Structure formats: C-alpha cells, structure tokens
Image (cartoon, rainbow over all chains, first blue to last red; front, side, top):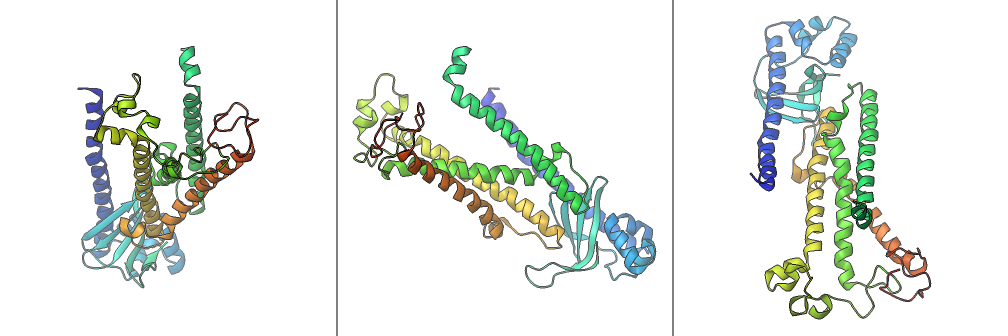
Amino acid sequence: MGTKSTVFACLLLALPLAGCGTANRQRDVAAVAERFHAALEAGDGQAACAELSEETASKLEQQEKKPCEEAILAVELPKGGTVGATEVYERSAYAALAEGGTDFLDEGPDGWTVSAAGCRPTAPEQPYECELEG
Amino acid sequence: MRRVLRDNGLSIVFLLLFLGALCGQAVAGHADYNDQAAQHGDPDISMARYVVSSDFGVDVMENWQSEYLQFTLMILSTVWLLQRGSPESKSLDQAGRESDEQQRVGPYAQQNSPRWAKASGIKRRIYENSLVLVMGTFWLGTWFAQSVTGRIEYNSTRLDHQMVPIGWWQYVGTPDFWDKTLQNWQSEFLAVGSMTILAVYLRQRGSPESKPVGAPHGSTGIEG
C-alpha cells in the first residue's frame, strides 16, 4: 500500500476509534451513576458513599455531623433508576436519569465519582440546584 | 548536505523555532493546568494526557488560525490594496491581478515555469490562486478546530459548575469563542499594519522585508 493510502487509512481508522473511546467513557459514567442510585434504593449508604467524590462525601459529613453512610440516606435523592443521557467533556460529565434528576461527575485517578447529585435546572444559563454537592 | 542547509536555512530555522516553542508551550501549559487543578482540589494530569487535552488543543489552534488568517488576508489584500513607500506593497501602478504577460502564464510561461502555469482553464485558475486557497483552507480548518476544542474546554468548565453542556452552534455565539478569536486577530492585524508602515521609514540592511537602506521613503514595492 502506498504511503498516501496508509496515512488515509490511519485517519479513517482513528475517527471511529475516537468515537469508541467517548462511548466507553459515557458507559462508565452511566454505570457509576446507576450504581450510586441503586445503592440508595437498597439502603446501602456505604456503597453509595463509595461512588461519591472525596470532597462531596467530606462536605456531607461536615454538614450533617454524621458518617457519610448514615448522612447520605437522609438526603432527598432519587432512588434507583436508569441513566437516560450522558455527556463527557475532559474530566467532567453529567448523567441525566430517565426518571428525573441529574448527577454531575468528575474523573479522578481511580475513575469516575459523583460530585453532585439530585440536581434540577433553575433558570436558563444558571447552575443546577443540587440536593448534594461538593 | 551543507548546500541543503544553506539553501533552506530560513524554513529549517523557523521549523526548529516552531517545534521548540510548541514544546515549551506544552511544558508551561501543563504546569499551569496542574496549578489550577491543585487550586480546585483536582488531581494532576500527566504531560501525555495534557498534550491530547482540549485545553492544549484550543491554546494551539486559536493561535494557528489567526496566523493563517493573517497570511490569507495579506496575500489577498496586497493584490488590490497599496501602501505608498512600503516594501509590503506593489508599485502604485500595479494594483489588481496583473496581465498574463506580467504573471508569465499561458503563452507567456517560460520553459521552467510550473506545469500548471503553462496550462489553461481550471488548472491554471486553481494554480493562480493556490496560495490563498491553501492558506484560507488552513485558516478555516484551524478555526474550526479551535471551535471544537474550545467547546470541549468550555463545557468541561460548565459541568464543574453544575451547568449542562451546550452544542457547537451555541458555542460559536459565546463570548468565550469570540474572545479567543478576536484577541488573536487584533494582534495579527496590528503586526501586519505595523510592518507595512514601519518599513516605509525604517530599514534592515540585507533583508528582503526591507527596502534598500538608501531607498527613498516614497519608493514603493521594492525589496532590499
């Protein structure tokens, strides 16, 4: 195969591979959000807190003056549900639950964690209001 | 080899300067990114991760697009626009695309003229405008790349503040996009304008960017 053909083939291959990378990350985000809400539905505060970012878990403990696994179960958050839409940009993402409510996630060295949950829109072009945030 | 270096010194030196500056930008940009991450309590990222990030991408593309715009406009405008006394301008009686004889195309092409200069029809039309076509394509391509990488960076920041992302059409109407675009354009237009006027009155002996040292201020379209 000539040089030009090789380069063109590599470029064509790169496009779907780049798309695969994004799709994988969206699936990871959705999986974390669904695990978080499934843990809440099961009443498993420890499992739910394991999906939170350190900052968010720490802030929750400071505000409620209880361990995270106790405090998280008292927060008004959707229990269970499936993710209807996700978008990922660099190390930030959101996951919108099909049943309502949106989570915001950050990617760290150990993967995705929930930084804000139970979020709903307020006014256009304004931050969402969240039941739980870091 | 020595001859290759001598005959191509200008492009070789600028290629090396470009690569050096790009590497330097990567180092400084990576350090700055991690500084800001630390301020937000976010973990550091590696250099390998940074150079494929949209933060680095938009910083590179916003500069490239303005450079190619500068050349596109310079090439096009100097066909018709004149500046008395400037070596950047053609002579005052030469405005326009000039005759085929002056441009040595078609029947006026010489034996060693480029092949498409000797051609007729669409091939010659393309070649006659190939410089602005390529520069213009690079400009639009890098400007589009700026919009894509800029949108990713912008949406990442929005998500950090619990705001949902916006689409491409919406992004290219944002102050963020136009701030990045125009801050680069103004510097390019300033550079061209400055060079055009300064070269009327100032000289650099031996440079084709300057008139000969002894050339009058009013002489137009001559090189040193």
